[in-house]
Image 1 (spheres, protein in one colour):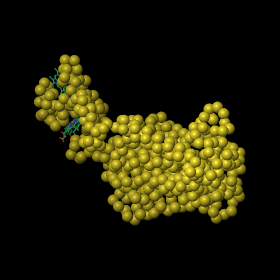
Image 2: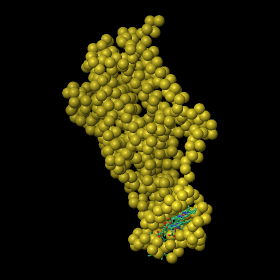
Image 3: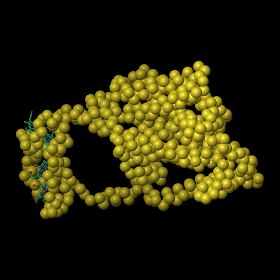
Image 4: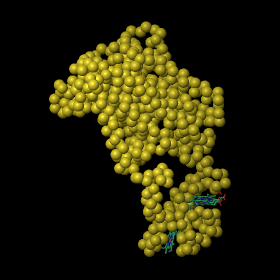
Length: 151
Length: 389
């Protein structure tokens, strides 16, 4: 009994720590969704949230339906397997409203180098140039047509 | 073609993801663990000489521990999400588990030990101070003003137990930081089971050096006499832990050199080129061999007090620089070479950026500001110690 009285302050420390743990558990209980972890280490609602994001890419089968010229041109050259939106960026907004949303044309100065800049880490078979030396500062599309890059 | 890259580098290796701030993280946690272990020397191993540094070491540990997670927070793009690590920790995440190790160490070990040790002072202050300070101290008493000899005896026993638990906890805290690096099996510069042990001993070395410098510095500022017996003892322990730390690092080096696995030539090349200044010059020569030589000299030759004092402080400062360089070489060095072992990249520290030099400096100053506040609140100076209220 005496011991308990003399150690009263320790009981207080224990209570403070316990209160901390309880507070933590209450917060945890309040903010972690009940079904957390049903499909894996994430909130199941996250799937819905992600699904609700607006679609940014239209897919090139859509582009081809209207832009026949570019599609034919591209299909004939080495860029045949480079998707329209890889160069033009996501264009779902344009497809949804062609009258009002007109895509800005890509900036050739940075676009081509993004894929073709020489880098030792790229496979040897991929066509690469040291752009500064290769083009001599002239825009790539003065010599190459973007949709069919052969000269 | 890419600036700063030589040879063959995979695209994801060109830019370093772990910056200067991640260098600070093991450095600061190391100071915590080291300072605490110095404090426990007095408490558990009854090394009476180091008594004048006991409370100072505890407060130093607390000040640095409070700052330890900040570099990590600053490194995150969304710091507020880091709390989710506590709410839904993933068992396979080394960092998530570190959060709990950290909390355990802060709440159960350090704060409780400091509180038990200072309780008599806190109660005394709560009874004598006025105004706001009185309320602060009152809150710190947790409502119990019982400082009877019997209760203090209990405090002493419990404090002892807490310290005994604290030593493995401090080992765990810093060993764990080493584990976070040592367990990255894809990185041959980090991946070694020796990493936690090396981190631990370098932590002890840097923590002891930091407390020594802070002790001498605070004595000079307060114009009080420096207890040479204490300084000699701390210097001796600094020497011992440093010898162990150095042997472990050499063991690692010898092992790597002899094993000479497929990564060796690449790492060896890196150490002789990009890491030459920071590893060979700063870490090994200036930061290890020089202070070790100085400390060894104090063990062999009898210098006057004034000279010994200068040697200890000089050696400690060099040690602190050396251990910082060691953290740098581990964290940054581990990201400078390509996993193809054929290329190297460079790291350029930014200045006034989120992960730049400026915030890093601020983070290194912050613990000293905290320490100043703590020292004002809970004076560690023994002369003023209140005996039984």
